[in-house]
Length: 110
Image 1 (tube, rainbow, N blue to C red):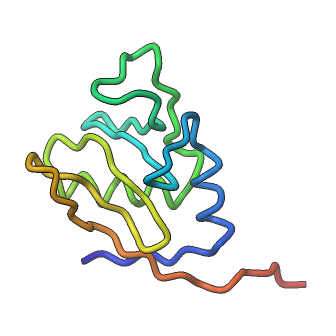
Image 2: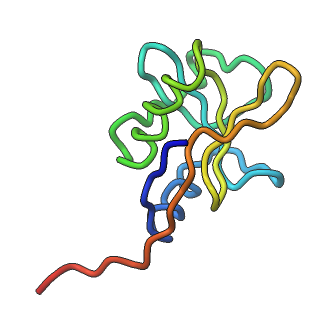
């Protein structure tokens, strides 16, 4: 299991990237083999013109998507909460592929 260190502020940033909020997950994204990442906007296939590219916006999101690529061929939708990142297999079973290690808030050095 891959671990990623994340602050509460970084988790809040991931949640803020959402276009369409879901009650069951704080943050939901999709990714493909081309390296593109976009927020959830509809169930099923997201048409190309409805995708808002997020690669490069968040180091945490980029890192999660990179780990997703090694965890699941073909990639697809992934789900994020306070504990980590998950995907659903064909049967709908959740699989955690990244565990978040919540770090205290970081303050800049003076």
